[in-house]
Length: 355
Image (cartoon, rainbow, N blue to C red; front, side, top):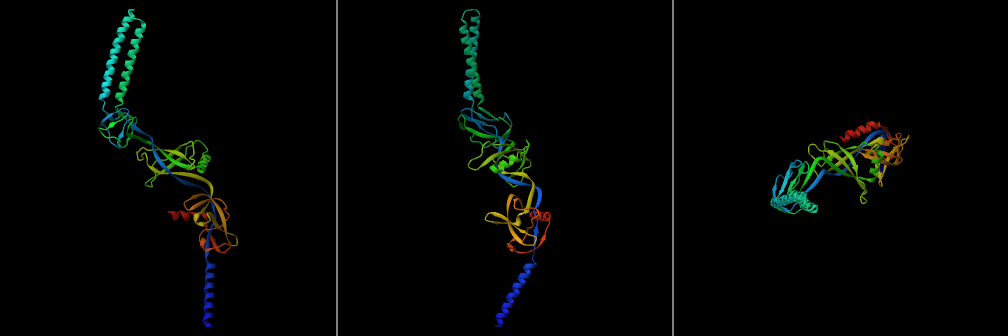
């Protein structure tokens, strides 16, 4: 009997001590704060040269010479490939001979026509033959020139698709040429963010963006959003944007990937720490403390998410006191002792933690 009484007293004593411990716990609360801030959004991107073309053979023949190497920088007009020109040289010599013959024939006919020996129609026929011969000579010269493939602009030569001595057909791909001085970076923007972008674009100023490269470092030059494509993709609901980046050091190459880093200003945003929130069935809540120190849960609507912070769209005001720490230690309608921390200090602590 005495043992049972002792156990009961011990249980009551422990419960009393636990209750006393709970009553002595002081919770930290703070207020939402209104600030001008910025948010950043990242979009997966594809990097393209502003000029990236295929160099193809314009005549059929054996690849006689290659004057450059893969990955080499070349200048506009520089000779890259030579297709064996013998056949086209012979055709041009033939065309030259025929043009000379037509010229002599025309001059002789003209003398006869001036002396009224032949009719004017015969002179016209001789002139037409001469013009045809000259046209065929010009065409043969073009075919001969086509055996030399030259760079149409300054750029970098890509890998070769043919080798020395190969028999190439007309139109066969030889290599690619990229002008990497200016890079076009494409990224897809969802419809809602596109509409926000257009609404925020108050004038003709083109917004600047940053490029986060594959090595997780920012590219050294900002880009400018210059164009938006005409149509949305019905399957993804996105529309492609194009930002233009200068590439004076040639670091970026055609086909690279990265992330376009967009900074968006938020004016007079109502901010709270993310750690002050909890989630129930995909909805965000906070614990609000009333004047009597009673805890009440309150649903909020998030406008934007930042590192360690939320911008609140609905559900709170700057007068509300929200529980900052110990969310798992309280329940609905609990009475707590609390201490109010200045919201600016609470935000500064978050930044310190982030560092």
